[in-house]
Length: 488
Image 1: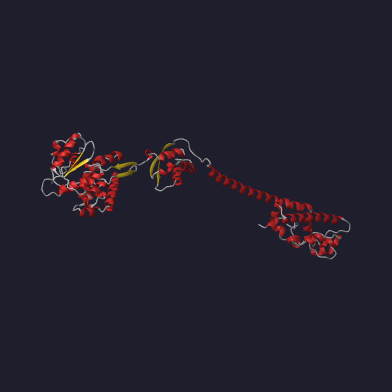
Image 2: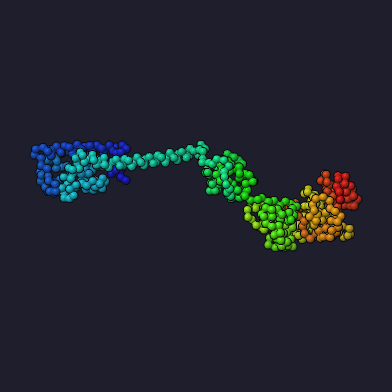
């Protein structure tokens, strides 16, 4: 938009605007003087539409060029007016010969009569004081209003923007719900989510009213750094503080967090999964008897016991227990690969399955992992004995597994039972593991201690384990066992 055309400088001041106003004022005065001269004696007004030739004759033979005709007609000296032409960029010819300037800029028709070349009449009509004033008021006022509207919008936007910045800096209260909320909604927090990303998830589920409310609370509370990824069961319309507390509460987890502990048996694991998922125990037992779909290693001999890795598992609502077992087996396989179970077992003259069985016995016999390598040595020494005196392991833990009896004393009938897990009656290792071994038990089986031991006894009070190489040492250890209240 041209500043000269729309009067921008005239509205806001400045040299160009002042000059334009002075020019208009002179023009109005000139118009008044011309009007007075036209009504005086001897003045003849040219008829509208007579053309330039007629106007020239009436003016004494001079052609109409701007205001030159009035100078000859009444002796008016327009020196100052003519001197203004061309000054400061204003051209008298351009302004007076108003064919395009006025029509294009202010919408006024310079020839109100609608035709002819009588430019003198059109010019006098415009040059009068009323015409000039009307044009200025008609064109400047809307422009002034428009400029003021633009300025107001810009100022408003600036105030809002500054307000937001000040609000952020000053901790402006963000929209927040009150209380502990209502209803139930399940959300998922991905691993690595920031507090802002968690807030966005909460807002989308209508748990909190705004992202900023939760971010403010999380920023002030260092516990927010402990939020774990997972699926959560929360309420709708919670306060941001209540939402944070809920995310830090294990009870809010929509998953059930199930831990397979070292020493747990498949039977115990299946019972827990059945109770948590509602799946029939018989269905899970059938799966355990034919675990070929679970991803077991080839050396497992299609037995699940010993191959479900002890760990904590998050189980979402509706999860198939089969998937939990697959995950547990997959973790065992990853661990076995990490420790190179196959190669290390071969170095000991054992199969990987034998190592798992031995590790499970160690797991059930002693609780102190520092004693694991010595127990492993007792097992290896007995298995390697050529005398025939120690061909049997004589481990109560294996018989208890077969009897599913883990409390109290074993009866003589149980000790004489004819089953492949009764190592008092059957030589060698049992056919399978008796529990899920911990990593330290597996490592004990892979790295047995050096020693001549064939016996060990765990004391009931001190919980220490006595190791013996001869029958006499063993008898002494058993005497201490009885003194501490132990029974066979």
